[in-house]
Amino acid sequence: MSRIDITYLVAGVCGLAGLAAFVGLILVPAVGSYRQSWQRLVAVMLSFYVLAAMMGIGLLGAGAVIWIWGRYG
Image (cartoon, rainbow, N blue to C red; front, side, top):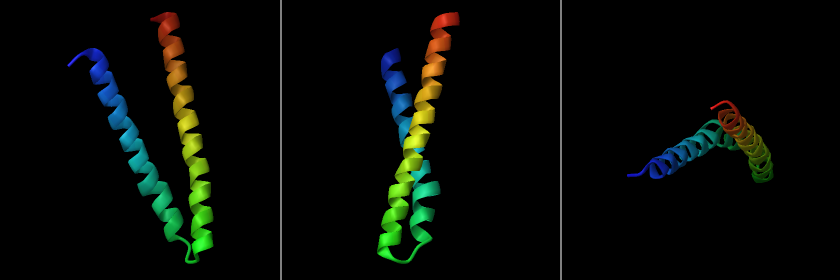
């Protein structure tokens, strides 16, 4: 297994772990907090805003690491 394959494997596992954390810690409690279907639908939609924020923070962090690594590494 080459280094790039290992990098892809680690990135995939981290992505699945992040998605599992989103579903288990954000989406399930948000949906379980409401009884009516329209409220659950709105909770799911708002949870996707949280997912987008998490992804944005992750991309900014990764970009910062890549920028610092290229500049000082």
